[in-house]
Length: 607
Picture: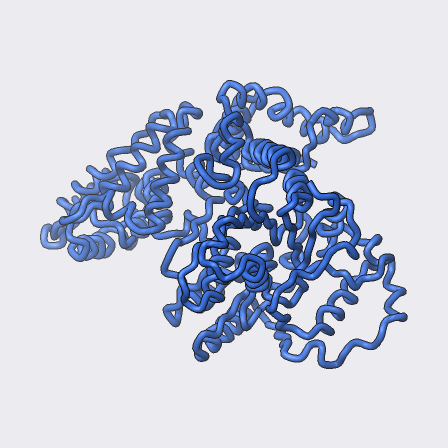
């Protein structure tokens, strides 16, 4: 290990990944195989893909063996999984228990919630509470804290009763959950990530690897990650590259940084590394800033903590040209904002090779912009993905359960039967014709009675010349909807009936239901979810069929789907983490409103 950490920064305004790639190429030389001995650790998988693209841009079409790139995953739990068979972490996974799956943990916690004395919680409410408990567990484990001092928070007679109730509820985590994890032979995902990072840090501290190791773009927001970054920076061939460290701010300003300041994470990391800002060098790279230096200075001054704003009077006047090229648009409505953003991005495509990106934490705005661009048949690349529940296959599965529990109410029934997947073993065109006939004859006007029998009763009141093929069509529907009954059943049985119903209704005259329903990128993702849920479903017993739709929605709801292909290569929507390392010719900051950016304080149900 070396005495002084090798820490660099790439200034704000410099395309981070392009500069990183160019600097690495300068260090390794022109030999095609030189990069194979380089290991690069980045915050996310998307950053790894973007760095690969940066290397390819710089290669001018020459063949190149890329370095080994691994995501550290500062934020998204899905990005914190390391391969156990090769790559980073391979040497240290053999003695670390596997992580429990997210669905298994959610269902196990749901079972504990439902088993509480005098609990009147429904399964879907329990699933949502379990999600909040899991989030609290991850937060505590991320910060390497424990629940040992929890009882002291509510000691004394003057505290509210709801604090005592919360403490009693949290015994699920303090008293019961560790034993369940031990019986499962698993670890919480965050706990396993910490152990893996700690083991890797210990291994590299004792035996630094051969070849260059570079950790880039991370702020060390996770303590275990910060410890690993410290080890890398101190290795003989280790380097740490920070994103946009402000080295020009006064020491007085630097000491006053609050947790809400964008430089606070970097300041905390420097303390972990036990170095000063003066010890951080510029990353050697030929890539230059795309913004004026005066703009970075202006933004730095604008973000000075309130306690030291008196230093403004000692600063020079801002450069009038600092904001050249920056345009502000104040929209009267969310629709107008989305329309302006979409129009700007569409205009970018008129210039060959030009790129644009919307940066926003506002998911509603991102969906509106996606819909607006869809008018031009543009599928934009959204880093946050799309809720799996809102994909065509996800909507179809949710409609299948709702229509049963609503006793074939006309609105829900027609929504399901008019879905593109619905065919019930017929030619899809013939099926749609039958559905329209059913709607005209039976589902307009007074509502038929509940269920299939209600449709048959309404059909019996029609004249013979109006029946058409409705009797045979209702026979078909009865066969499809007969998979559900009114008896409480284990979750696994209800899931099987649900899938059987969906596949039966999705079948056409020339394709079985599974081939139609689970096809495509979103179908495959949904099939993986159903398989994972089936593996964990034994946890819950005796779920009433009428409670199943809400439970299914609660389990599916938070899961995102990120298409692997078919997105536009020059237009992007990025979250704040992705935007930290990315660059586009036109950068759009959207949703700059109180409540979305900056966000409202999250109201935890526990603390």
